[in-house]
Structures are given as C-alpha cells and as structure tokens.
Length: 428
Ligand code: SDX
Image 1 (cartoon, rainbow, N blue to C red):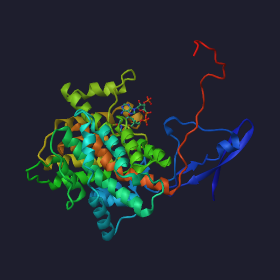
Image 2: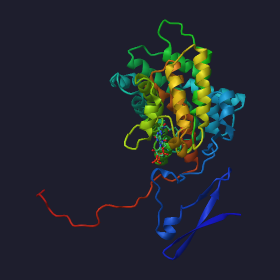
Image 3: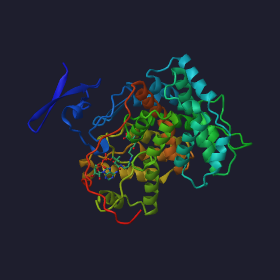
Image 4: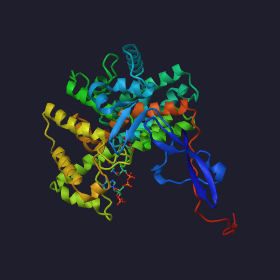
C-alpha cells in the first residue's frame, strides 16, 4: 500500500507521496510541493536530499554495504575484472562471453587519439597537475569527434561513443604523463587486455622490452573495480547535472573529473600520502596529528577518514588495506608510511572524537600506498580514481538520459537586499 507524508504549515496541510526503493529505502516525493504550497525545501550539500531514483549502485552506509547492480563489491573485486564490471555498470547485467568480447573489442579498437592532441598537451607547462590536463583534453575531444554533440544518439551511436571514451582514457593519461616527463609516447596496444595496455603505455619506454608484472595487473583490476561507481557522490552528481542540459558526454565527464579533483573528494588519495609523508618527516608523531584533526581551530583534517554516507567501515577500504599487504609483499616493497597509516587508523578508531562522529577510513586512505607501490607519481593518484570511476559516471549519465531527466536547476531562498531605487553616483 502506497504511503504518504503530511506537511502542515500555517494551518494548511499538504499530502506528499512516499516512494520506496527495492532495498526498502523511503523518500518523500516533493516534486509537486512548490506547485501545491509555494514552499521549497533547502538542504545545503544535499545531505538529506535524493536527486534521482537509480538502479545502478546500492550503498548502505550504516552496514558498510556496496553493490553494483546487486553484486557485492567483495565478490566483484575478487572474481571479476574491470572491463566486465564496466559492462555490468553501463548495461545492467553481467555480459555473456560474446558480449564481453564485442565490448572489449570496441574499446580496444577505439583506444587511439588524434596526433593533434599532442599539440594541446605541448601547450601545458610540464608542472601542470594531470587532473587539470585530463579534464581539458576530455572536453577537447568534442572538437575531434563532433558526433558526440548529438543530444539524441541512437543506441549504436551511444555505445560507440561510450566504448571509445573508455578506450581513449588510458591513452590520454599516458600521453600527458610521458610528455610532461619529456618521454616519447607509446601507441596503445590492439592485443593486450585493458590493464596490461594501461601499464605498457604508462611505463614502457622506446627500445625497452617492458615486462608487465601479473601482480600489478591484478592489483590494478581490483583498484579500478573498487572505484568504478558510488551512486550520487559529488562528481557523479556533477556528471548528471551537466548531462541534464544535453551537453555532450565528453563535457559531462570533463566536469566530473574537475569535481573529483577536490581534496574533499577524489583528491583525498593524494592528500593522504602527502599527510602521511608529513607525519613521517615530523618523526611519525601520529598523536600530534590526531589532536590537530580534532582541534576546531586547526584546518587540518585526517585525510582519508570520514564519509558522507558510510558511518561504518567503507567496504572498499577493507579490501584495499588487505591488498596493500599482499601487493607490497609480492613486490618486496617496505613502505614506512603503511605502518604510519595503520597506526593512525588504530588510534583514530579508538578515539572518542572519531567514534562519536562515525569516522572510519574511506576508499582513499590506503589506495595511494598501492598506487605508489605500482610506480605511480602521487599527482596521478586522483587520475587513477577517475580512470576507475569512468564507467560509473558513464552508466549514471546513460541512465539519466534514458530516464529523460529534466535539466538540473535547484531553487533558492533569497537573503539579499530588498527592492531599492538606483541612485546615480557618477554620470555614465
Ligand atoms: C570520496 O560521496 C562519496 O561517495 C565519495 C567517494 C566516492 O567513491 O565517490 O566515496 C570518494 O570522496 C571519499 C572521501 C574522501 N575525502 C576525505 O578523506 C577528506 C576528509 N574527509 C572529510 O573532509 C569528510 O569526512 C567528508 C568530506 C568526506 C564528508 O564530509 P561531511 O559528510 O560533510 O561531514 P562533515 O564535514 O559535516 O563532518 C561531520 C563531523 C564534523 O565535526 P563536528 O562539526 O560534528 O564537530 O565530522 C568531522 C567534522 O569536523 N570530520 C572530521 C573529518 N571528517 C569529518 N574531522 C577530522 N578529520 C576528518 N577527516
């Protein structure tokens, strides 16, 4: 039986429908509130506001549950691979072998980018942060692939655009990385799997027979799967809003990259390593930094801790922490900041301030330690987050367009000057 909520104001009552999702989540539907009452609601940061109904990813922040299209993240991270998960997110079901081969083939077939992109990349100073370069180049792709501007592509056209972007991202990232280092770029492979190709275009050098370590390929698949989607986070909400104006998929994804860059969001994985390095340089005094994180007069935050939704362990952090030990052991790497991270985690988890606020390690707390072990510079960590999140952003953009979602345009409550007449201060 459908439920309703009642809002009473100024002696008037308004009945509002209550919707219920497949996991018994309930929401008061206020889509007709203003028309019926002249009222709007306000919720800075959308902490209590849902922007859409979605069938892609389910999170339960209290229980620490994360599922892509119903499949638990723990099972996908252990048994699947990134391209199969990308197909699942974008198309809603796990692919048959034939569907997976066609999907992967279309991605590989389109993993080239125009040589003219090098001219764009040459325009950036070598010190440019790769997230700014990535956002700019993705947006620039509309110049080379104007078919992306079609707001109503056929299914085939949309699939080609989607697969093409998934294929091109590793090439864009590697060209930006190598050109910033003054190294020659490497053409993407037409034979290798997605993660092997990424490692080769990033780390192989002309004339060198670069051998890809299967441990690194496996760790990369796991990391990309764990980052692939996370329902309506800041950057995904950005992709949806930009896409709702019928701007191109490239424009929406470019905006998502920019939103992800912030240190409160995906940029945290870089900030975590910088924080751990600072603690190490400062003698490893974790108690001092925990006190700073709790001090309201100190802007310092424990990066990699806390989450808008998870009020329990971020299930991705558990998996990455375990993978940290395995990857560093397999690569015979001893990284002192891992010990500092573990010490900090233990102290925070036993500290009243953190416990009272349900602050636990999130996906960014340990991921940087693995990225560093894989040989990636710290400024590339958030780029790796974007590479993983791409299929999720695309799936959310596709669902929003297929739902024919209205353009995203929030209302406001005005608090500025009331009407007043212009008085001439100086003649025109
Ligand atoms: C990601 O949304 C997603 O799904 C994002 C993500 C994804 O996959 O897309 O999961 C990826 O962005 C993970 C989060 C990465 N960011 C960080 O690690 C940065 C550090 N964390 C915080 O800045 C914070 O926890 C946020 C931004 C993640 C969440 O902020 P909220 O939900 O707005 O919570 P808040 O800032 O209102 O904090 C509530 C309380 C406050 O204290 P009081 O005012 O109640 O006294 O907790 C405190 C905050 O001061 N707090 C922290 C803290 N995080 C929150 N105190 C110290 N250190 C922290 N890290």
